[in-house]
Image 1 (tube, helix red, strand yellow):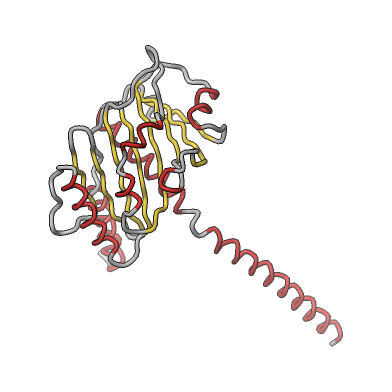
Image 2 (spheres, one colour):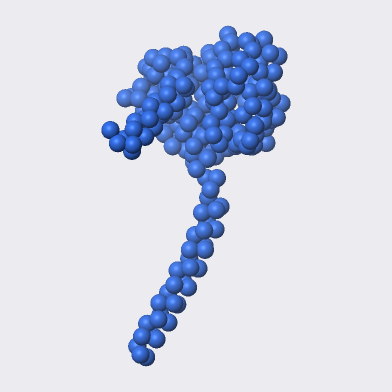
Length: 255
């Protein structure tokens, strides 16, 4: 085996280790979820670990290990906290099981804004790093046939996308705008998941994919101002090259 093949093999093993280091959580199908992401700089990962440990002790959760980890799940009766530390950002997911009630037999009472008062606002505001994203995800089992007008009422606008996923195991509706709550200064991007028949592991996997989509969609836009600036520079360079080419062509004709 060549050195390049060895390097490729080592990279694949590293990727597999990274995937297995962040396993999916087994979850029920009634979930109220709040997902946050923070851009980090040097030592922010250590600060966030200590900060999270201090918060957990205040709400009577088990303390974190002294050695900081890239991934951790703290589970309580009414709250599951999922922490992930990446190279550029830290994500924090607060999962509240069985908090969504039904307005009638099949239609759930979604996005109850009164619930926001129960969230640890100061903890989230002061989390180490630069706040990047806040998402509010509601998941319920429901047979109700949702129409676009129903989703508009939940999102307060019609700028959203819907998709049938997991082999017809769920319907997902994702907003492209922040809501009107102005929660911790930015509002929340809303996602509604209608869980039809997914088992606990597939439910956890779907939720993790949704929060990753939310996070990386916003991260991908961070470089947009620089791309626009470089596009302007490229346009100017193209004009200069065109003028140089014309000048060379005129000179050749004279010769």
